[in-house]
Image 1 (cartoon, rainbow, N blue to C red):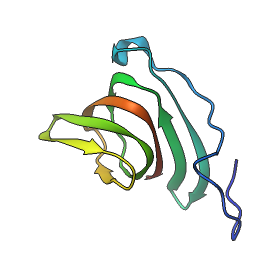
Image 2 (image 1 turned 120 degrees about the vertical axis):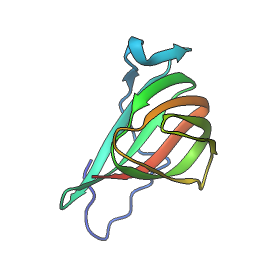
Image 3 (image 1 turned 30 degrees about the vertical axis):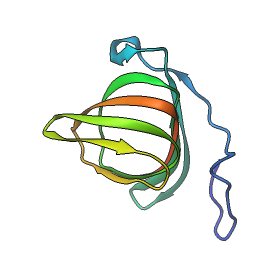
Length: 115
């Protein structure tokens, strides 16, 4: 799906294709995840990402996101920062290379802006 200037998109009902998270990254459960890129503005990508309940690790890209629905805990493994509890309305800035552990307790959907 691509955004069109002036045309709203319902991000809560937007269809997102998901697939199992790579087994080496999964620490608990059988989470699936997926994303729908919506627009590129210069070198910036805007999209929606979703993950079902479970625990998985990741190495992050430069990104700012807002949680639309669901709940999760984000542990920052390197550098060590306080654990973040996120839910609807949470705004988070991740920097490229951060090591994280995502514990999703309710399917998490977020809108992201990444470069």
